[in-house]
Length: 310
Image (cartoon, one colour):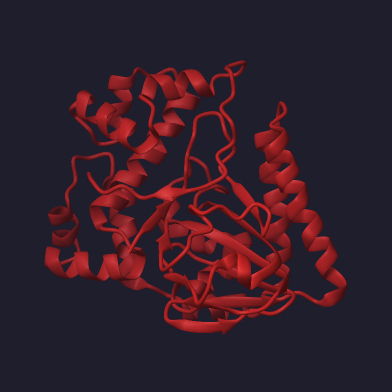
């Protein structure tokens, strides 16, 4: 099953948006067929018909439905998305986008007040209903985000995140009984795994190390984490290291070798290889592209299939 990963690019905003049917590409996202992803998704069906399947549960999609889809959920359609949604929008973004550089990024995103609706989606998909009188406003919010990303003017990254925040505020206000939702979606094993990853990603940690700390076999841990998230423990370690590497490259003057050691790669050559495999750019190229005044790359409008590896 394909695992879609957010298409990080240096100097671009960590959020993407697409409209159905005009912008619906043949790639991902939106993706055709069964898939999962490592980012959060807002799917708004302004005018729609058909069905979507999330974690083996089939939902009828009708006008005004807003789906909040959490990382690791399995998504499939009974037909092409463009045929299902007469007029709809998708926005997708990494789980740590509202908490850049903070500790506990993977374990704590569920506790962010604006991401409460997604927390419920960890073990059951969530559909929110937008009142008819409010639907035009939702279209305007998505359109404003798209316009900002498309224009790519100075300061567009901050403006795009501001538009995303407005969408998330509106979604959070639609959701009720937040505390009960978080309790219902509690995933103690995943939380423990991400806590270990967060605490030790800067070490040369392995799957066996995580399993030993949790008193589990490596095979059992791999099975559970892959089934619930679509990724292996080692892939989550790699993603956490890459997140911190991007932060250090853009926010400090540390050498690439120093950053390599800080994110758990004693061998700088291997770090450069892994970074280039994940980002299609070397750490130095990423830093240069992200500097103020650098020629900005075109905003990334689609995700990409996740890569395996350590």
